[in-house]
Image (tube, rainbow, N blue to C red; front, side):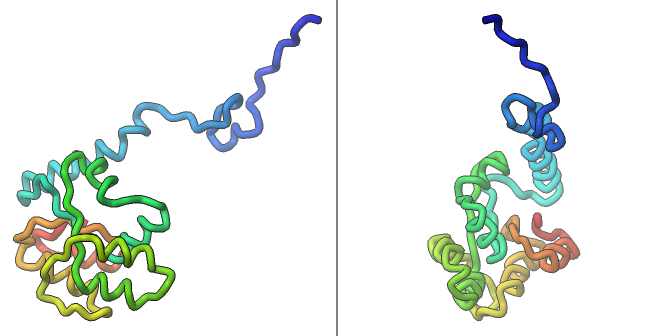
Length: 168
């Protein structure tokens, strides 16, 4: 029997930007390096303007820890990849207290926060003062040269409004 030629149709996944034969996303070289390139440019600005350099000290908020736990990411492994250098991940005691008070839904984020080094801050260690402790850690022109990782939009705006603020 002669082999039949297969018709090249767009396929059922064509509307999703997927290949007709493999159902995998078509990735160009720009898509793979886009995030790293953008992070490198941003860090270059903060390095020259504010003196933030390696090893990067990244202060992590409870919302970012929970988002990483939901995605199954280890921030101690992923942040150096994104930042392109060594990174030290730290939390404040108030962030740990806040995660403890939020209950069982935040259990994995709480366990991760307990294992991370604690940063001394002038804010209280109470559960409701987590964002205040993050803000107090970067006060006075961010003398500790911290980068802040948070998913809280209000905290991001408050950090960006500070002069010589942290890298939100």
